Structures are given as structure tokens and as C-alpha cells.
Image (spheres, rainbow, N blue to C red):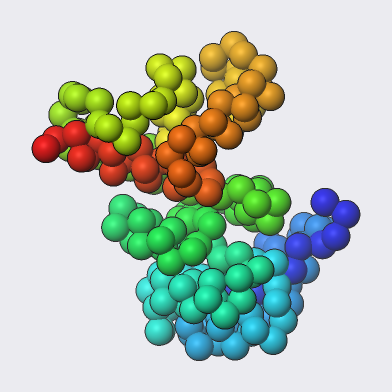
Length: 218
């Protein structure tokens, strides 16, 4: 990207926030434009600065999910990402439903955080691979590995295979290598998958897969 990605960090633990800020300052394509500790801070700074990304914590005062929802409503151009200790699948789903484009755990490395922010800034979504894999495992366990739900009926076997890889946190390049096909071919498949499932991004596609397989129980 030619322009720097403008970022706001909101977390009620000062030492952790300072650590994240230090990590971001080490990337020459990122620019830290604000810090806060509450949901109110997040919304206020988002309105004032219109950054590219606001990093939020699920459990901060006022609630990170509530902040993401308010920012999505007040500042649609601003993207939000969760950086939290919560590994709850429910929190992941709630955050994405609220408009967050990313969900990372606080054990994430600085390199992964920076890569995820670059991905979100260009319009993709990102969920920590461990959580993405757990979402898929949960959906398979609860569906009993059985019938194919109506919502997935239009997907080809190859498309379902690719979506399974996405749910495991793999990038298009990694999927292409695994399946021995071109990266552009994977992108083409993903476009078809998102259109068929009527979702906006990869993360919503994985959640649609989970919900469809859960529905297959009934």
C-alpha cells in the first residue's frame, strides 16, 4: 500500500496498550493516531480521526463489541478489529455480527498482528487460525458430520473443500499450494462461494458454513 494505515488502539490495560503501540510504530506502513481505554473513547476517536482501523478489546469498559457496533453505524469507513483474551466462539460471532473485520487473541505475535491489519486494511477479514479451526471443529461435531444442509447445497465439492481450508485459517496462497492449483483459481472459487452464500467476506463465509452444518442436525 502506498498510503500509511492509520490505527487507533483502545484497551484498558495501559502496559498492554503501550506494548501494542510500540509494535505498531515498528511497521513503517502503520501510523498510530490515537489511544483510549473505553468504548466511549473508541467511538469518540473514530469520529474525530476517521482512522483506517480501530483495535478493540472485547472486555474493556463499555464493551468492545458494543464499540464495534457503534463505530460501524457512525463511521462506516472505519474498520474494527478485536484483540482480546476471549476465545469464546460466541464472542467471535457477536463481534463479526457487530461489524468487526478481525478477531485476534492477545497471544498473537507482533508479526501476525501487523499482517492481519494489512489484510483488514485492504478489505479482507481475519480470525486467529486457532479460533477459525475451532469454529469448524465445533460445526462438524454438532452437525454429526452428516447431512448436507440446504444452505450449502449449491456449493461444489471443491468449493466446500476450499472453504474448509479457509476455516482452518489458511491463506489463498497456502490453499493453492495444498490443493496444487493456482492462487488465482482459489480467488475465483472464493468469489463464487461468497456469492452463493450471500456473504461479504471470508470470515462470514466460515460462519455461514458453521450455521449451515448446525442446521443440518434438524
